Structures are given as structure tokens and as C-alpha cells.
Image 1 (cartoon, rainbow, N blue to C red):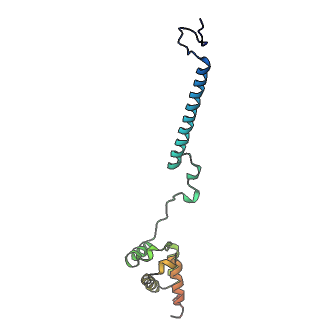
Image 2 (image 1 turned 180 degrees about the vertical axis):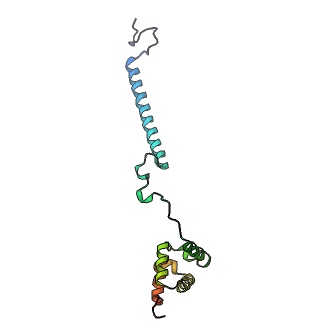
Image 3 (image 1 turned 90 degrees about the vertical axis):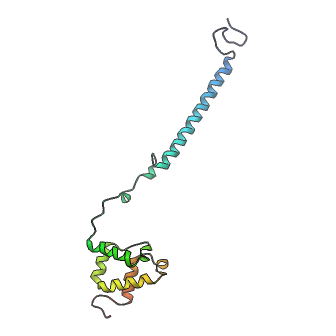
Length: 151
């Protein structure tokens, strides 16, 4: 038998069927909104740790490839720089092994080390210069210390 409110008496069905459907739809909408918030929050967490973020994939030039072994001469040069010219190590670009070989080919090693010591004693060098190699080469050319050149 149907009661006043359209429900079935004694069957445990809500008294107002129209309101019941609205409540269910409302609850579904809330759970869907909560689910969307959960998904958005998870995406935010994932992007913070690099999951699912296309921009976080390493580029070809960013991949770490094994570096070629350094020559003993280059290792000794870097140790000398650390011991004798720590101020120059603050410059943005340090001398590479290829650059060191080019310097040794074009200049006397004594002139290179003397000029590096002079650069170390010039305190504003890190403010006005970025590259140890370029600065060293400029100072050597300025002092005309090229191999075979007038000294």
C-alpha cells in the first residue's frame, strides 16, 4: 500500500522518492567533485617529484654520459690550481683539458703558471671575468708571452 508521500509502507523506502533521487544525484556530484580534487592533488604531487610531467624528462644534452678519463697532466694541473689559485676556482668557467693542451702548445708552461699566479693576486678578477681560459689567454697575449715571440 502506498502512503501519503508516495513511498511503500513497511518496505524501508524513503518517504519522498523525488527528494531521494535529488539527494543521490547531489551525493554523486559531491563524490565526483571530491574525486576530481583527489586527481588534481595527485597530479600536483606527481609533478613535484617528476612523475607524469613531460617537462621533467631529461633532454639528450642533459643525460649524464660517462666522462672520458682525464690525463694525469690535467689532474695535476687542477690540483695545482686548487693549492695555489683557489680564488680563480670561483670563476664560472674553468679550463678544460683541451684548452689546457692548447695553452701548453702555444705558451711556455712557466709563463702560464706565472700568469695564473698574477691573476690570483688580482682580486676583482672574478667580478669582471667569467672564463679562466679566456682571461689567461688575454693576459698572456697582453704580456706577449707567445712561444717564439719577443719577451
